[in-house]
Length: 379
Image (cartoon, rainbow, N blue to C red):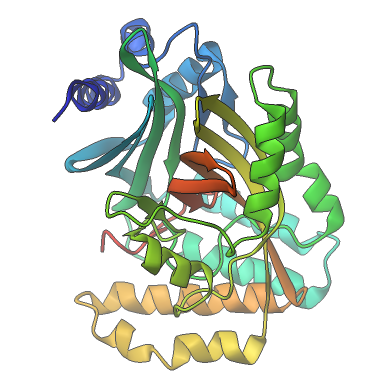
């Protein structure tokens, strides 16, 4: 382990300690260890509105997590790092433990939510799909009392060297998603303009320290996905929506749709903010992922793999997951024939005469709702 890797490991250990202690008095120590005034950081939280620019806003999201999140733990044994010139990338797995308690107030809030869905401007079939999807999560179990769940979290970061020491430029908290539909989707032009993408685009394009020419090149390159170039060595880090790390060959197959869960991954819109040191660069951004939906195919994908649910060690939870997955398809196919989802993207790479080569790339979904039994990997 070189000195940069040792420093990054120390950062993560301090971050874990601060998330465990939840003491706001620790924020200055954590901020000084992670960030530099010379390198304004960016944090992308799990929520679709959590785009934080600058040290002050990044500190705010830490404080909010310490106050409102469940117990967050980092699996240091899963840490993967790569250095590209003066830029380092890191990915580590974590878990978020959350508890749900039964109460009349909770169920009243659920009723308020479905009432709003029922009075939306969508047609009746779309509204029914939305409500069934929501209730498949909200009524995950009829057991009374308190229920505990774990969510998988991917913590990733990109560090630049400042005065010989790595400091975080970009950090992201994301949740892996191993079925075809995220919980944040945009099906109308009004929603597209009003929600995640428009807000993120405004923030990104107004950032003072972005490299406009490089960002434009990255926007064009990523919009051509899956026709992109990846470093072919064994140290590349390439992560899909499901949070799994693949080598370059496997990731290209993933982008091309050669898997069970997704069709071709192609972005209709991309906006990035990029940073360059010599021939090396880092970036983060947002985009829209469009895929055509064919109802018969979507339902068949689930029903033809029913054995995957039957083979689960916990049959009760497997039944709830089957209901949830069918509810997703019903929700999506009741509306538009195209699913439009906001995504996040981050990475590092090098410039050459032919354009860009990525040696770290991650695509992820934002989440709006943290609901019962949200992800499956921990089960």
